[in-house]
Each structure stands twice: as C-alpha cells, then as structure tokens.
Image (cartoon, rainbow, N blue to C red; front, side, top):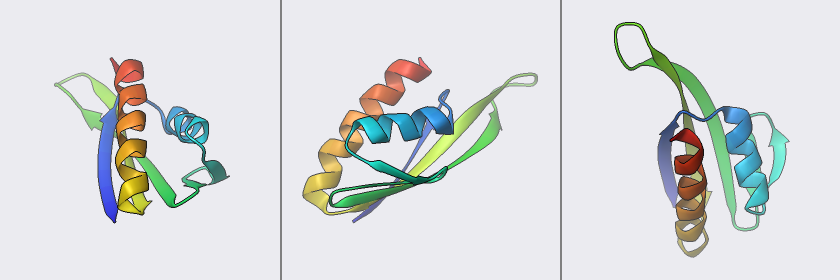
Length: 84
C-alpha cells in the first residue's frame, strides 16, 4: 500500500523525529524505516497569500495496510498539534 500525505507548518526534521518516535529508524534526512513500513520525506515552501509562505512536508508512506493505517493516523495527530 502507498499513501502520500502533505502537512503544512512542520519541518522535515520534526517529521523525521515524529516517525522515529513511532518506531522508525532514520536512514537519511529524507527516509525513515520501521517494521512493516517506510516513509520518504520531502519539503517545499508554499505561498499562503501575497506575502506569506509555509513549509509543506510531503510524506510518502509505503507498507502493509494494517501497519500503515494506525501509523498515518498517529503521525497526522502529532503533525496537526505541531503545525497548528
């Protein structure tokens, strides 16, 4: 299973930290691997108005469906609290 999700207002470093806390090991700045799953991260600046921009982190989760569903939910909750 492959799921791509984007989160605004958090850094790629913080996203890696959250994934590590959820049982993953950082392989590189843009990849975290856990038991039954892996996540590739990328980030970019996105405009949210004429003079403001935010960091948007995209996480591509891959793995077994029964493992990914709770992982993505837990990650999204952490990212939502951080990003406001």
